[in-house]
Length: 114
Length: 113
Image (cartoon, rainbow over all chains, first blue to last red):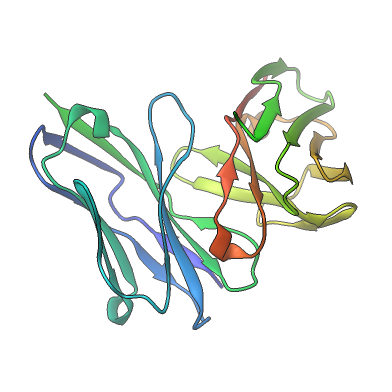
């Protein structure tokens, strides 16, 4: 069965600090897909990244980076030089090949203080 | 330019009344989903559809039913609303299997009093 765990319920940092959001997943499939979504205070869900299980290369997009490690079943998300606009709830999610559904972690509420 | 819309955006209803939420898409995507979001639980799948009149249960389907008579519309019905169904409901669409990602609607905030 699919399962995603985000152990950090809330994180609060001061602006310009780096912050890492943890995501640990469980799956029996060898082919699967991992996602991160951002939910700002306005409430919509914003897609950030999708990674498949065969691509363990880390990805960087501006101040955002993702570290995928199959050996530890983790897909962590780092924000470098955080900004107040990064304040949001962040969700990690997993979809198994052919499962046709997305399973979410509990979410991490990130607060960036000026 | 939203390819997916939910209605209503907000609703307050009384315990025991039926409620229907609507999800409408203009993307012609095959798959549609209903999730609920509650503090501490993230988003949990209620039901999903993989085609017209083809639906299946998610992990929290008790008390909910769905219908999809047209590709573009996916309805979620609470037959007899309870306070435990107070939540934010999100619809999502997908054009295929998981590699293609998911697009979410803006959500419906439902309060059952």
